[in-house]
Image (cartoon, one colour):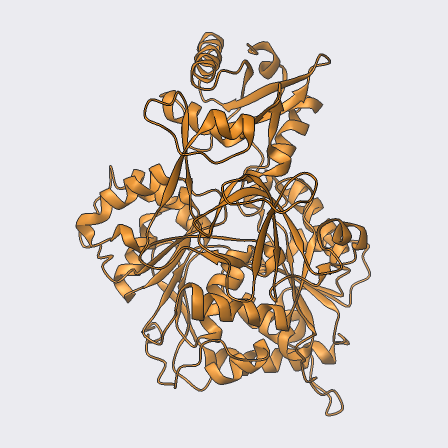
Length: 579
């Protein structure tokens, strides 16, 4: 009978203080901890100790070298949540190859779109090999058709290879590339973020020592995908370099059974786990109809929120719903980061929970300043504090002229520090557009400082500017979803479009009723709510369920939604119901 790896590794704890990832695994492999992969029914499918992972990765690394793969070449890995991905990723580490995690098909709406997408990723990475889980082997073969690869298929393609004595594994250095991580692609096609061993290890050190203060008694639980930086770095690489065990199950299984997340935390004594806001929201909603008897969250000390804008209201509902199960609101850890910085840039102080500023929305939109809302302010919005920059990292908030702004002034966020990417792989112009010669990264996010903590207000490219007002699209989206009863979280996207007479606000709404009169009524209701709450006129259109495009990590892609609308992809119904 399979049993999960223990929480106690039995090793003297080292907080991610290794020069490279292979050296970190070498040390972790001398202890008892490891990776535990669960099925969608909560059954343990594989318990892979770090010792076993190291042995199997070294064997596979030798086979990859025997196949003719040369240190520095990229290897595309379709990132299933299983032991094979871990084996392949670390085989690349030992072989001096550069693994590149590719997404699974769920977010792409069909085989053709998915095959085209991963083919473009393979080409951008200039991969020498591509590996897929057995279920996607045919899809990968289609994506690789006509490409000059040394190897393509499942891991079985390396089983026949035997390493020649002359083919030695290289010594991996700190300035070697560790992996390519494709950016989320919320405003453009994803770019391959090139992360060195040095940058990764700097980030894991900051996460473990300063951000989450990880210790040998901790245990991680995750459903986050490995092709996203929060899943890969946060809940595969960081726990491993800290020699602690991880319990993992697939994102698609979380979507079907969100309470499995809490069950695994209960069952194995999980202390650290992360999710975007929607994950907590989904659990609270499911708990309205499903039993949560037996769930014990009392050991969960780091309930992180990241990967998207932090929304206080759904988190408060989660906290209230699961307080009786031992969950403490002080366990929430809002944080901020991005793939271009390996992962993390800031963490709210542990034990702080959710702290937020309630701002005067009119002053924010008109004057670009964060002013606390006075009693009776017509419009307000809550913004969550995400902590100070990690040690050795520095934030600046800059104005349109590049001047550094004072606290409470809203501008573009820049960051400098040891975790930053080397480049967008093979894209020097794109790199130069965001990374200066003196090491400052333009994050593309807007925000301000509050008491020394960074506060994110939105993505610069998503900002809607109408009549001199800066309108955040999520303000409109969340208002509609909150106040129109038939709408749910994730049903709405707000963008600006050129009407020929200036910018207009377009609001796309997923709606499930086929009745035309019901659609027209919904459009009028949404438009009325947004006019009342935000003082804006909008063109509201309905689109089919699940039609809003999302990135591989689940983020809404407003730019793609806008493009699809302008192309007429959503069909004639969208135009027929415009208000």
